[in-house]
Image (cartoon, rainbow, N blue to C red; front, side, top):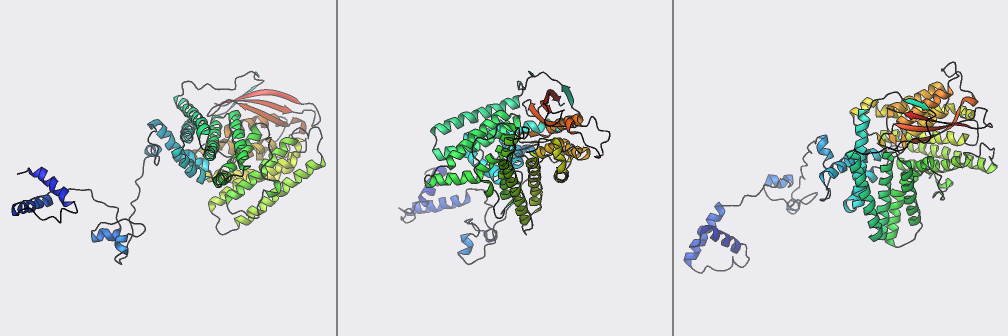
Length: 565
């Protein structure tokens, strides 16, 4: 007789065959044997894990559910009501577990890369999203990273650098600065990163991304490769922002902007049109915002702006993102005009065409403000929308002040904007109040890095152009509490430079209550800043421009260095 174990297996195979159930037994003996073995099979029923994902009704009926959503077919086919599915609450993870868990991370990624990718997912992406760009940073970038290694390595590098900055900011308290006049002009403007394994790891990931992107551009499908190049370019710009290096950031921007504008000028197939639509909706707005920084930290743009001034404000804003994109268009054209007038105002070469352009820019700013006011009266406005509107309003007010005085060489012309200075500081104080004190933000683990400019650069403008002692001190106080880098604007650097300029201008004042302001000849016209590169640079070199004999006199320029702790 065949051993039971082997016999049981043979019978299971026969019973699973459609023809075996129809075949008659060969003899009575074999029939009795099969019946006996069948009983043994029932006794040795295979144990399987219980399925707990079925609908509530099938669980009560104790039958297998087919788990069709939203109502299963086992219930609806018999006329029963399906009571749906129970969703178990997710278990809370510790911060360390959260940093090391990224949804559907690629199998080939290592544990160190996984941690940095986790930091990017849980900290970097939400902070870069700010009020407007969650769709881009928390969904589109991750979707692209699953299939594009160059994007993934850039995300890992950015996450590692961001985590390094967060660690440094939380270890260094607010301390006084040291000023060194007449620093040697040959002083080094670079920091060596030897021995910093975290930074070395980030740079290695950055280099991998660049190499992989180069290969992708050489061998990949044209439309997809262009999208990968543009998205990766934005990540590269962020990496250079975090490193405080404006030159490569501007180079990346100019390269990406050239690709975007060339691509948008093509009229191709349906697939190409889909690519153009995605570039217009998700990619180009980033490059428009980077242009603001590129114009402030580099040379003015050499291409025509893609949006005409009269088209910058739509009939209505459907979202705060629309309002943001609109004021960015106006601000970009404003900065282009201001850069154009920078030295012409000192040679009195202000022509009627220049005044007409200035007035057109101011009209568009007024139109933008009126359109935003109408939107804020709507029924669907949230508190988050109101907070975002404060940030956008700051940029509109500062851009308006800047363009109003860009045709006048006298620094005292800024005194006419005192109410706008007050408005800007008050809005910034309200935003800072929402964010909380430095200690509260540290407790909440708030980010110290943002992609976009929010309040740092506008407050620096107020602190250097408003000579009312009380208002400018309020601006500097908010900068000191902010402790944040927004793009290339570092709040520590901004507050230190503003304090130095304030000390130079107020040396002859007898009171600081606002009843007297610095004389025209005592005012600083411009400060050119060169900073050391790094996550949190300590040294900044200043070229200070004054005209001690008045706006038509000769320039007096000298160099100083500021050292932060």
